Image 1 (spheres, rainbow, N blue to C red):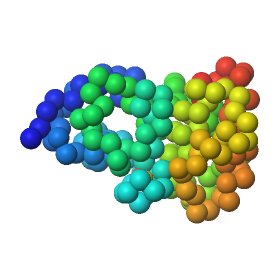
Image 2: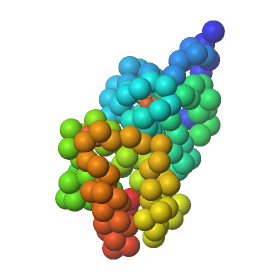
Image 3: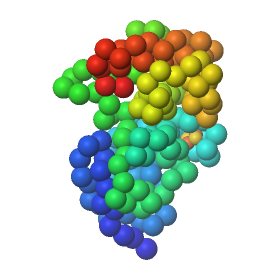
Image 4: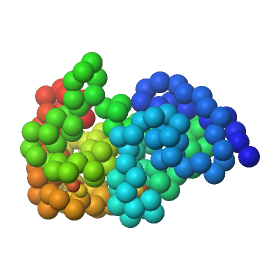
Length: 160
Ligand code: FES
Ligand code: FES
């Protein structure tokens, strides 16, 4: 069975016919062509597929595309504006929060969601918010530094 999916993706309305069993991760990558959202474990364990659903992090590998009808989805491609990186994108770059980079879109989206809800998170709140994301390269210290720097940038007016 297929249905019509009508929702907001990265600030723009989008309408597509989608099979009822299509995962949001596969919809984003294969139908829309937004490959920034990564396939990692494909089973809810790694966080590489994290997107924002109405500003809250959501694992797109565990979400049916049809279930986001009428809602707002943001992917890493939607963060920057007018050719400028968002606060979180810039901070991960400047504070070396990425090495191989495979996990980075998921961390960036989870961090952006955190800063939209909580502009000045503590270290413990950052660790809790990123607890569903796994990185095999960085050791996490640089990632936490990046999120704190992103909060500073956001306080200066750069959108998270
Ligand atoms: S690919 Fe979704 S949690 Fe790993
Ligand atoms: S930077 Fe390589 S897995 Fe995180």
